[in-house]
Image (cartoon, rainbow, N blue to C red; front, side, top):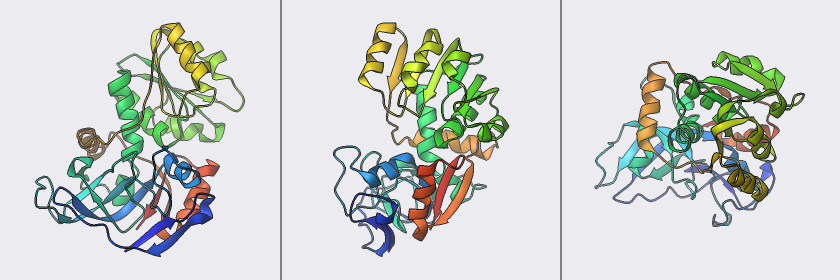
Amino acid sequence: MRAIIQRAFGEPDVLELAEVERPALTRHEVLVRVRAVGINPPDWRIRRTPFPPHYTEPPLILGWDVSGVVEEAGEHVGRFRPGDEVFGMLNFPDPAGAYAEYVVARPRQLARKPAGLDHVQAAALPMSVLSAWQAFEDIAEVLPGHRVLVHGAAGGVGHLAVQLAKLRGAYVIGTARASKHDFVRSLGADEMIDYTSVDFAEVVSDVDVVLDMVGRDYPRRSLRVLRPGGAFIGGAGMYAEAVEEYRRSGLRWGHFAVEPDHAALEQVASLVASGKLAAHVDRVFPLADAAKAHVLMESGDFVGKLVLEV
C-alpha cells in the first residue's frame, strides 16, 4: 500500500510517499480502506520530535483521524462488516499509522459515518470534536447561560468547541486574529477578541469555563477572567507555575489528553446528520502532498481543519 513515512525527525520535507506492507489484521480488529485523513497539531509535533516520550523512533507513519470503508473484519468483530463506512480516532496517543491507504483499528475506536457526510468532512472531525466534547462533558459541564471563553476559536478544536458550547445554550467568547472573526461569528460566537491587539484578560470577566488549546502563558492569564466556581480546561500544556497558581486559587482546573470514544462519536454523528454541527475544512491535499499540508498547518494561516484525501 502507499503511505507517508518519515525516516527521521525534522521539517516537513522528512515526509515521503512510499510503498509499505499493508498492516496485518487480528481477530479483534477491522481493516479500513482509508478515504481521508484529518491532520492535527500532534502530527507535526511528532514529526519534529518524539511526543509523547514513549513514541516509537522512525521510520513511522503519522496520523490518527480517518474516514473510510471497512475492507475486512476479524472473526471476533460484531459491530462492523465489510462495506460499512466508518470514521474515528485510532489508538491515540500511541501510533496508528493513518497517513496510509489502509489502517487496522479496534471497532470501539470507530463510529458509522453519517450517510450525508463525505469522507473528507468526516475525517476532519474525530480528534478535534472529541477534545471539545470531553472537555465540556468530563471536566467542566457547560450549561445554559454559562459564559464560555474559547482560545484559538478559529482552529480545529476551537471552531467545533464554539458550536458545541452554543448547542448547550452558552454565551461564547472567542479569541482569534481579526481576519478570522467573521468565520467564528458565523459559527455562533457572541463576542470576539483579537489577541494580537487586545489582552483578553483586560476585557473579559465572569467566565464560567475557559477552554484553552494555545498553552504558553494563556493558562495563567485566564485565571484572571474566571468567576468564583469557574473552571479552566487546558489541552495544550500548562507550566508548573500555572498549575500551582490554580491550586492556590481554589478554582477548578483540568489538563487533559483526548481519548478514543466511539459513544461520543455516535452522538456527534447524530448532530452532524441533523445539521447542528459541522467541521469546516479549509484545504484538502492529496496524500502525496502531506509535507505541504504540514507547512500550512504550522503557519496557522487557515481556519478549521486540513485534510489529506487518499
